[in-house]
Image (tube, rainbow, N blue to C red; front, side, top):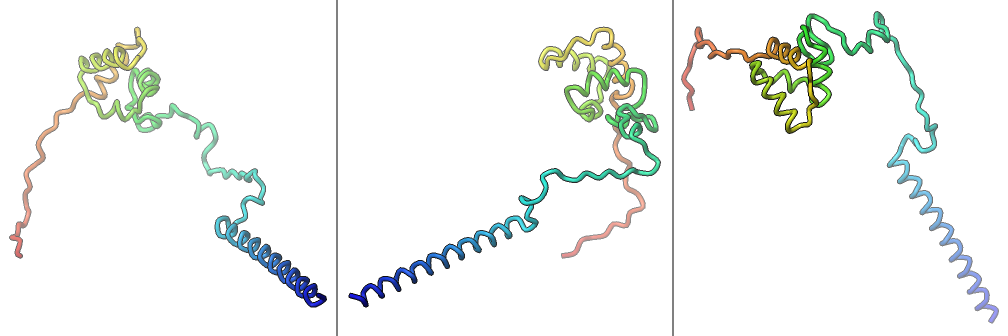
Length: 164
């Protein structure tokens, strides 16, 4: 009977040792998997990133925040051409869509008016009131249709035959 008790005690100790080794193995495996997923251990770092600002020589904050700046006759934020009614167009047209949509659609004065009416009827564009004439004049002046001609014939080209 004494041998059986010793055997049971030995089995219990082996089982305890195996359980301990298994738990240590699982813990090490978990740590290694975490290191594979997040090698920088970002979960243990400060949650507030440090912000650094660098000053660009020759610029000031006022220059960078000037949304209505015009250079070489072009409104920088929108790409519109400088002219009478520019800011009316910027304030009324770019609220709903990109300035590129305006610049790519070159139309006559009548077509601009028809487009504005269509937007008022179907797209809920507000009544432009007395500003409409200035807006249409600006658009018809700077974004009128342009005559597109045929490209010039190719000349001074050395042609050759393709061989198989």
